[in-house]
Figure (tube, rainbow, N blue to C red):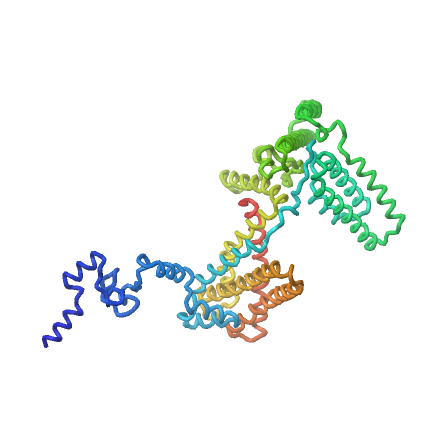
Length: 515
């Protein structure tokens, strides 16, 4: 009897003053293996790895670095057997969603947690996969000592899209002339890059002319006439000697700007307020000022480049101004160019603060549109970063479509939401697999060209399998016949595609504003 009492007292040690004092001082006597005998959170006696009262683990992550790392992975990723079992079963269309809805939840990672993890991981990898070579972008420039600017990217793009021999020849002659002017202004030791650029332009122009010969059935006479017409156009496109673009000093720029603006100001004095003639004159003045600003920037960058004895630096454009005068606003309302003050975009039924916010976004979008045309990788990365948010909004919409399409099935909205989440998890995993294939192709193809074919075949197979997977998943989860499943699948797919198109359009504008 005394032994029982002694044993009971021993097991009830949480009431003993010595043990209580030890725990208050952080020295739980434990079980001899480094584990506490009582929960450090609620002081209940422990009977396993987790407290049966509050659920806290016996492992203290702040005392062991290994346990701390384990806790990070376990709490965020849940990298136990469930993640691998979930990913394995996702390969079978509908298995995970059907089992989860049926109550077999402990074996799988919860759908919302898995969706967040996979979507963030997918588009994190996308940031490293989708990229542009900055040296080959449309913003590539060559600036000579006099400030001549050659936009190789834009010219080469125009040559590729030219639809006549005359246009190709005109672009070729203009580009080569500008490159030759830049070449003549630099030391002979630095001319190699420009020589290669000239050769590249010549080859590209010849290739485009040969392509047009085949597409338009041109003979030698047609080619010769087109080249002659192109030469005339190129001569007419040369910078006039008295234009702002031909000014050699900042003083000349100011003199020529004032000379061009003076008659325009005189026209403004006689033009009726609000007339089209007045608007046109305002645009001409703005265009003249823009040309002067671009020429001043080019001269300043050229002077800095010459005095420093180095190539133009990316920060020079920010410091001295943009040298690209192709900045006409693509936005216009009421027949006039958009302006936040004189011609704003207004929604009549919106309050004033909402219209003010809208025009601030339009203004940012207009500025970023020009940046995106020169540095497209900035826009693409901004767009990719916004995709997970858009998908997160599309999932409940997809679940709503399932709910409406399967009215009378007896399933609640949250059950449809689980199906939608697991569907999008698989789509994200497929896209992730495509990105991985692209990364592998970029790494392996330069050494083994056959892998590019394998990668392309794998990506095509994934695109083809995705809609088939979703159809099989719907059939397995809802258990309808093939005819009814196909009908509902078509309705859901069509509506979802339309809504997704609107979401993508909104996402493209949002990414442009936020880049």
